[in-house]
Amino acid sequence: MKTLKTILAAAVLVLTAVSAGATSWYVSPSGKNKNEGTSKDAPLKNLQKAVDQAVDGDVIHVAAGNYLGTLNVGYIEIKDKYITILGGYNEDFSERNPFVYRTYIQTSPENVSTNGSKPLMRIDAQGKRTASIVIDGLGFDLGLQNKYAAPNDDPRNGWPEGCETGRIQAVGEGLGANGEVGGTTQGHPLMQGNVEGRLVVKNCVFANGGYYGIQMMNKGGDWEICNNVFVANSYASCQIDSMNKDANVTTVDFHHNTVLFSWCRTKIMEDMGYAFRFMSRVDCNVHDNIFGCSNLGALDYSHHDSNKAIDAKRVIKINNNRFFMNRGDLIMPSASYTWLYIMSRDFDDVEAFQELDGNEEVSDQNFLQAINQPYLAGFAQIKSVSQTSYDPNSAANLYRKAHGLNTMGTETVRVSMYGNRYPFEDAWKLFGALPGSGAQAKL
Image 1 (tube, rainbow, N blue to C red):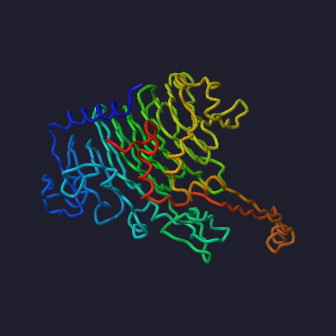
Image 2 (cartoon, helix red, strand yellow; image 1 turned 135 degrees about the vertical axis):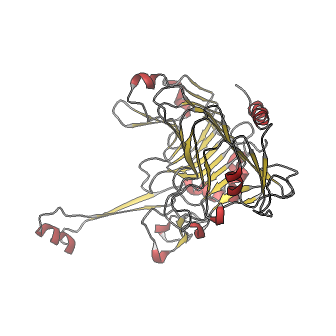
Image 3 (cartoon, rainbow, N blue to C red; image 1 turned 120 degrees about the horizontal axis):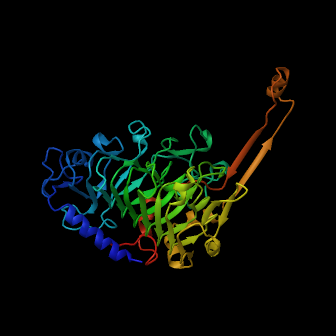
């Protein structure tokens, strides 16, 4: 199998060849939108403006800083163009290191009224099956805009000592007097869209997504998602669906990513909560990743095409991944239509995939120490308490009886932790935490 160094070197050669005749754009917090934007000495200030002016094949170089779109609305949109965005430059563009010079989209409570339900980055492009879109070296974080319970000892708040916040709040939920922090309960994806052609996402951070980290529709093309850190995203950290009726048209190479704390849909923790999902009619090569602390399962293999002939052609390879503290490392349906929670030590018994080799548990203590320790400790000790009350003679139930309606009770679920905010700064520390596996701290 190719090493990460070889793969990234090849990607650089491809990018150089594609971009040889392209225009280079420059964006910096110190720039001005009246500048031409095609010179390092006169960059634009607004990333969205550079995206809007770029044409197919252009490359946008972005200096360190927070970019919130036009008039700081809180999102960036790429529409019907195949471009490259390279974050991670220093102020004068003389050096690029996205792990040091951090380029990101981090919204705040002020964006609640301006970004609606939009993802932090929306990408829509079709019509060019062989063209490429590259997103390289950006951070995406909703941790300040999401609404969380306050960090206090009220048992309703789900706050492990030392964490930045209590548990994330559901849509329509409010804790009132016992405290809240942040902005809104409306779920946002971090990256979403529909793309035909080649999409490359690498050297990025996806943190605190209230509704998916990456949720994309592949209209046909070979995609690569590599060397990223995903942390504290709800529903799923990465889900790529196919928009094609045929098999073997949509491929995803998902490798050298570190994916931690993928949270379930609700605090009851009954569904979702996956790191990576194998969707129908998508060929996947999943290798050399770290999958840890998935609230339900690291790898989800529950989606199958109703056309069994098409489903039988799907190609899935799962090699050399590292797992730890997942409820299940692999989720599969059983013959009785319940879920099988399979750990990596039992992968030898699974025969559903073309390749399934070299997967094992993480035992490296240096890697575990790189994770935010209060967050990890809280996850390791998650408790859920359910309380049910029913009073047949309550005023409400007496009324319901009198009108021939079913009587009702109430159920309260309290959890010690659920979807709490992960420190954005700490997410970057996960690059290179385990040499050779997961996201690496080098281009």
